Image (cartoon, rainbow, N blue to C red; front, top):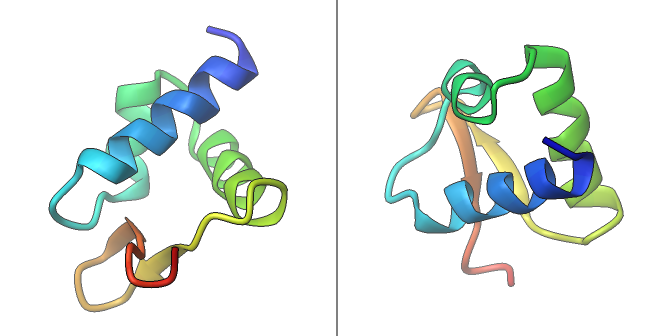
Length: 68
């Protein structure tokens, strides 16, 4: 899967998820490693200005729909 496709899929997963999604689950769904998931999350934050945050309470990543 190409990099853009994975970033698009990651965005779709975060948008459709009702709860926080762990990095391990994201890696499994995207079929890539944890460091790659973290690079993609950074890309969403820095290049696409999406409000992706990590929730300590729920131990996972969320797309903060209030900040969009």
